[in-house]
Image (tube, rainbow, N blue to C red; front, side, top):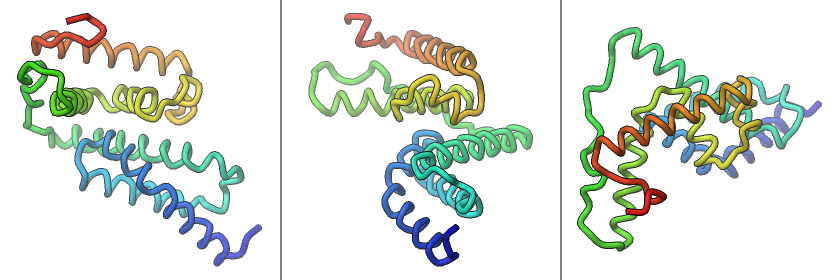
Length: 179
């Protein structure tokens, strides 16, 4: 068992090494920089309280991600329960970029896609973020979300169907669609 100072130093080293990657994950979950920073800070505070109980150093990232997903879901539920729904609509920029294949078009399409991802239900968004942004397997995603692999598959399937529907309604076609 490490002394308090050694554990604090280990935690500080971990945060220094991983904070940027974890902040990116938090941003993809929340869609806003300030909310992402709040989410990460909350997750790291909860992780710090459990730091001495984390036995496998390789499991720390998964633990922090799980805390972020759970905390974000909790925030979303609290906001929904208090009728604090966002009134903003996703931008109408999907499929409206000027013709061309420049880098700016790709950035606009990526930003539009993440705008659509942010409209997903929290568990669906978490599944998409962990599977496709964090490049986790279905089993790893299930472990982080605390659910079965089948639930990950169904949440991911529903999320992708919703994204396809939204893209279709916006008049866009997926790159795999060939247009």
